[in-house]
Length: 81
Image 1 (cartoon, rainbow, N blue to C red):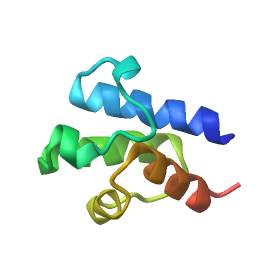
Image 2: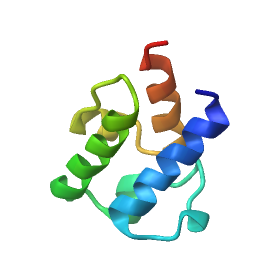
Image 3: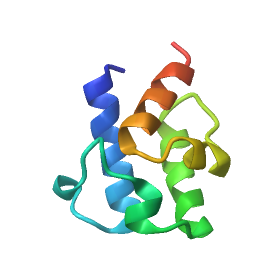
Image 4: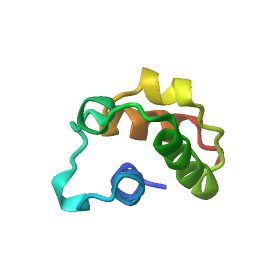
């Protein structure tokens, strides 16, 4: 998946998880600052991303890559071709 496509996918997952308009999100959006760190929502986000990619995403990974752009790059780097 190309980066722009993955970025849009991650934004859509975050919009669904946190019930916000995807247009209000960008790659600079800091997920924990904007939406908090409730584990149920974070687990739901991990599951959405995992269902469409070939990676296992942990709650710890979300903490290491707080912005949408950083999370996108992590997913792309770890996705199997």
